Image 1 (tube, rainbow, N blue to C red):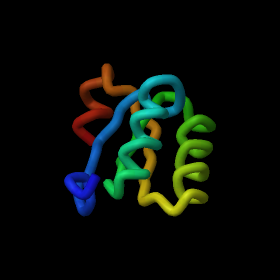
Image 2 (tube, rainbow, N blue to C red):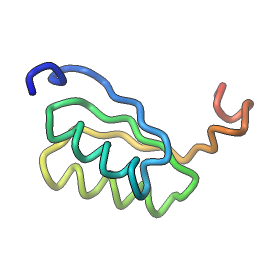
Image 3 (cartoon, helix red, strand yellow):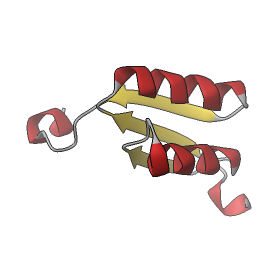
Image 4 (cartoon, rainbow, N blue to C red):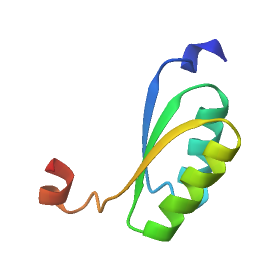
Length: 72
């Protein structure tokens, strides 16, 4: 899937479930994935797992329902 190479995917709720699967899949296609979740341990785990597989990822703890936090 060359379409995703050199693209950035922003994925919220990425510490588990569908968000985690989507982050892993997009990274495997060559996209840089920027992930966020309210679960700090989950974010760290997903970042570690994607990095271990050679993917490009950055993670941040964020509650997207908190407007002020989202703006920062």
